[in-house]
View 1 (cartoon, rainbow, N blue to C red):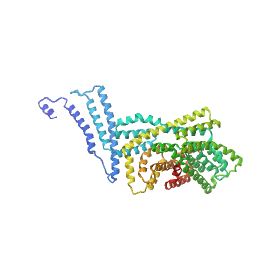
View 2: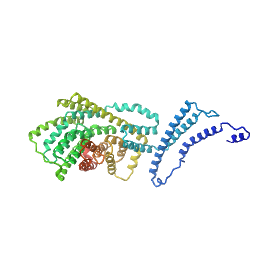
View 3: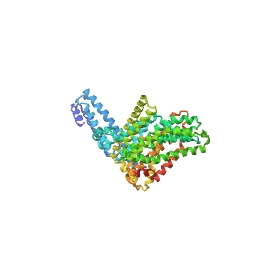
View 4: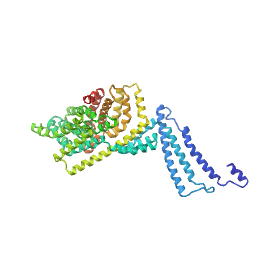
Length: 559
């Protein structure tokens, strides 16, 4: 500028001085943006945040840095686009013929430095914390769960370890996850449930229950609970059990004059037995994630599953005692009718005994047991005349669709778990909670309450895979007076029951919406009323298992 002023005094102004000033000014501003961020010199108002605890302030600072990085990323993208456009058009300054793309390039480079500074100022713990929170928000916005976990897990993993390690992980992770012998048990159990449905086993189970219990007050509801428990033994899915038994038992209870609250509540609660009575798909995934024995978890679920079915039957009996108008007395079946109806139960007992006892006795692995069970169920479906070529095609397509969905979620969960592990957030969280003065039992109850709340809003598989990376290190850091394997088996059963409770808890229990979608003329409020007693009994069972772990660990201990 001084040269320009002096030159102007001698009628020899410096041409292009403004172009030099503009370029240097832009370089200076762009360069000092990351420096300003590094020094924490940005202007902010702390009127609302000043009273907050330091831990909260640290979390908000981490969020601010992530937002800054996102803004800088957008600016980088636009600057690169602008620079490429200027380069293609060969744009230059008027006097000095300086290429315009120089300024864009310097600006983009400075923005990349800004991003690096922002990410440097975020601690690993905060990255893990915001990964977890971000995943919950995106899932709540109805984004596909598997995609969310891949996206959030990938971003978090790259922010901590770098892009190259992420790309190397993605090179091998999908195939190793999908081509997994142990996980083959999942589609085989799903296929077994599909074949059982095609074979009409659910209807046979309900007919047997109706023949034995139908003359009781509320007998059809009791028969429905028994049918759900038996069908769950060959299905492994809550939704499939609830949907199948609704088609079979729903019309019967409606025709018999049962109140809408009783029959819809019974079906919603009975459906949850599909994931509690082994074999359970959720337990398989939990076993793989925690490196526990699938067979041990199946055996551990037997007593809680039987207890759940008995408790649900008690709820039905209490309901009809206090609300007599909810049911109509039915005629008692003859002994001949009972014996004929019972003949339809033996295929289910045979398959269940073959699979679960075979795994328990070590006759075959869980994957082999699932294959044997699927094949046996297919033979029974063909023998009973319930399997045609079209039915086989439907069963295979349905199994393939569900398997693909579940494996995508599990792939995302693996990357999400790797990102959280890199952040050390689960470990630090476990250390902080374990350092509190609360007893392990109180902490366990708090975790189960968290599962109950999440279960009201989230699909069970997504909820389990999202939370296990956080809660497993915490559980292992607590002293329950048991071995590590025993704690993980016990916790797996508690998680399973918590998921089950969440699926029927108003207002957003997913089983409630499923039943209501199949019984559109029944107000949702009636279904809410119908499940309250079952939810209360679930809470009792959960408390029993927390204070008496032997209910879950006794049978596995006999192996």
